[in-house]
Image (cartoon, rainbow, N blue to C red; front, top):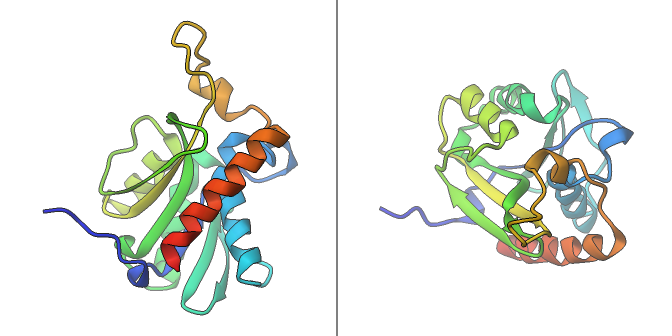
Length: 178
C-alpha cells in the first residue's frame, strides 16, 4: 500500500542541522535553511527554545529545529513530539542527502536512514521510521572517480550559485503546502 502525502496532516516541519555559526552555511544545515525559508515566507515569529528544541507556530504548522547537533537530532525532536502530544507521522523532517543531485529533492515516508546519522537518531528516538522526510540533494560531483566522501561534502560551505539553486528547490518543496 502506498502512502499518499497529505499536507493537511502535517503538524510539524522540522529542519535538521547543526547549531552555531561554524556550521551555518554548510550543506549539513539544509534542513535549518529550509525551515527559515518557510518561516520567512509565512512571516513566522522568532523561535522559542524549550530544552532540546526550538519552535514557533504559524497557523496550524509548528516550525521546529533540534537544539542538538545533527547526529543527536532525535533527542530534540522526540522532546517536541512529547511536548505537543503528536505522532511521528505528523512530522515532516527536512535534511541533506548526498545521494541526490543538487537541485533535486525526494519526498519519502517510512524509509531507513541510508547512512544519514541525523535521521538514524530520529528513527531511534521515535522508535519508528514512519514519518515524512524531504531529502534535499546536495551532490555536485557526479564523476564517480572524483566523488567526495559524504562527510567532506556535508561540511563544505555553500557557494552563491548553489545557494540560488537551493532557494529554487525550497520553493518547489514549499509548493507541496499550497
